[in-house]
Image 1 (cartoon, rainbow, N blue to C red):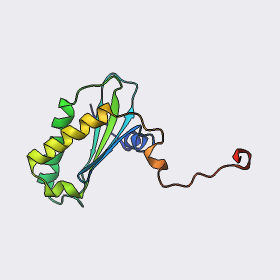
Image 2 (image 1 turned 90 degrees about the vertical axis):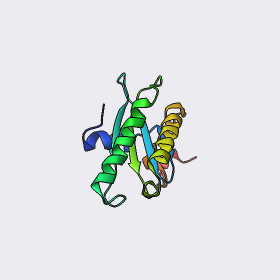
Image 3 (image 1 turned 90 degrees about the horizontal axis):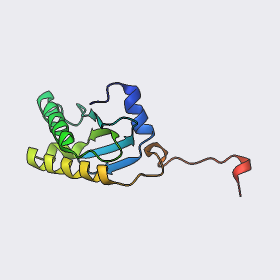
Image 4 (image 1 turned 180 degrees about the vertical axis):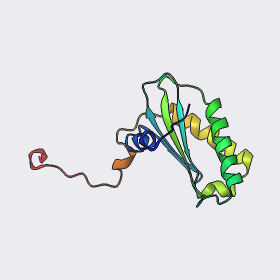
Length: 129
């Protein structure tokens, strides 16, 4: 299954509970209430100008996703391609994707969503100790 609209993508970006990162891909995951994993992909023209290459990367991502073992907590996963993807061949990309999906599926839940990194937390006067 896939993530279809921007609302579903934004929920994963804002409430990510799992994260794997490398020079080729960023993977964010959020536990869903379904019995299956769902996938969303972002492969931009800025990273890969040729549509043929973008579509090939998407096929690799989907293929690797299908082979991912379903863990006890089904996830909504967003895969964002980064600039390192253009420097690798198909076999290297497949190996990288398989490894990252495995790490994502077996990773522990992160306590802070991905969006809070780097932002200053402002406390109300009643919360100061």
